[in-house]
Length: 372
Image (cartoon, rainbow, N blue to C red; front, side):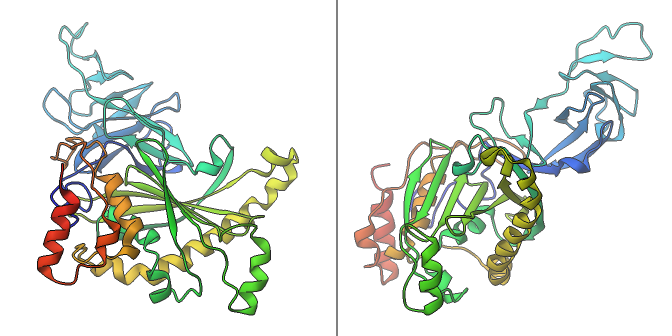
């Protein structure tokens, strides 16, 4: 990467990071049903076998190219509509009706699939290197879930995600009377977490009241996996709200997204199953929190043409996100044509604010990208 402006993965429609992306809600694919899906520019047929397992295969039959979503589920496999060739659960040709035995070898490519949070996820690589996104404080915890909005935005998913860590827009757009500063904590090679480090301010009476519910900093934590899925954790110490934003890019560089609301099941911590009755209330409250933050940014997402021309030191968290994303592995999937580099951005936070002219900006970006 040459600079913060000239990125290779961040905000680049031709780059697809190898990761898990959402496909459908699980409830929208019934047993014995097959659906077509243009998935990040690649045509797939996604079906749920009679065994209840979801499978995703390349869409076109190797015989004459008929779309397999026009066919039907047959046991664990899929049978083409055109000449009724059947492919088993591993994609191997199993039956040609006009022959006693197939007599030839043919197969359709299968792709890794996972169901989590009531969502079908598909992996854009051969062997998954990491799990579907999770909230760090809920790792290993049984959760309840519901859904917020399904949406489209006029900008790339990476631009949507950095908005949540753009600390100084909280005052200018959302008019929040708090100051947010982040630290950055990598969680392995595919995940990065940003945590607010500032306490609740004491400038207003209601802020002093709410500060009683925080032992430490104001809880506002963001976690991202591979620059494609992120989660937000907010709320007082006794009740955290968790929102997952599952995003996938379109060929035009826009975003298709699904909001997932999750909360730990009460029985997990207390052994009192009746507390699970409160989960719908908690999830509804979580949805209201998510809607509040999303409303102020809707117009921005439809019109922004993101170009990082004049970074300042308050953009620290955004630069760290870009740095993380530029190290991710990309794949030749659909419209993804870029092979990733392992080289990372170099941070020069003390010099960022000095950039006041185009010439200085160019010099700054060259320094940031040097030694690649």
